[in-house]
Amino acid sequence: MIKLTRINSEVKKAPVLVLIPGGPGLSSLTLRSMDILTRSFNLLYVDFPGVNDNPYGKNKTFDELSDALQKELQEISGTKYVLGHSYGGFFAADVLLKNKCEGIVCLSTPFSQQALTGASTNYFEHMTDDLREAEIKWDANQSDQNFAQWVSKYGELYFVKPEGRELVLNDKVSAKFFLNNQEDALNKELMLPLLKKGLAKKLFIAGAQDKLVPPLLLNEDAANGGFNFVSVNNASHFVSFDQPEIVSGLIEDFFNIIHGRK
Image (cartoon, rainbow, N blue to C red; front, side, top):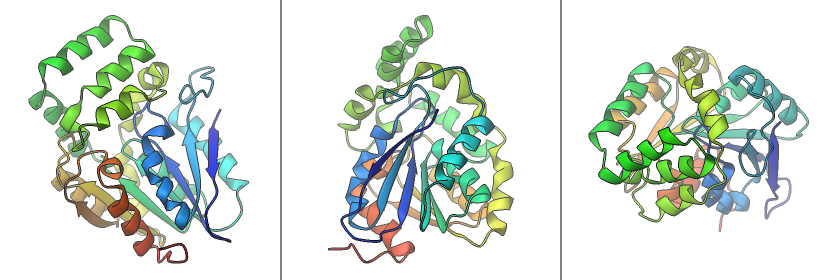
């Protein structure tokens, strides 16, 4: 059900960083700009059913998928950190609350209803003709190909770097996973007070030019969850793609991971 791809660190006895992609429906390939973190971590990329050649099977709820991920991670020994991008941040938060992890990184995760509403508003305010046409085509035929085409037209909603379009256009996406799990983002605001009570280190990174979710609202979510918040310039919603070196350095510095730095 859960596909894990391990990329070993360049250094011995490095901790594990579990990386969970956004979406739903996007694969871990959208996070592979973080491969540079092998200088400090053993990387463990997560793929949910349907994406990145992982068979879909039957529909699974957020709780079922999270429980399956928890079981996989319990088999991983050593120090663990968890990172989630956007929708993936909900799973990262659940892992932290239920599993023994030293810390969490959320990238552009809209926990609150206010943040989700802001994303919806921004989507329509930044609607282009290309995005509208791709959405119409997706609505008419909800295939993997049309899903990838649609999200690739998000443009500056997702990326500062224009080549980001190719990242999602060529991703091994799952329309089924998107359709059956898109409402899983609702009610995740309830996680924030639980996260705030925890003692684990919490880092929230957002793009200063995020055109999808207003950075101000992400900052408020981060404060309500007890996260340290950092805004990265020249980056939009896919902050780790737009500024991979800066994001990687922030993660290493925050968790005091220095043994692999060059």
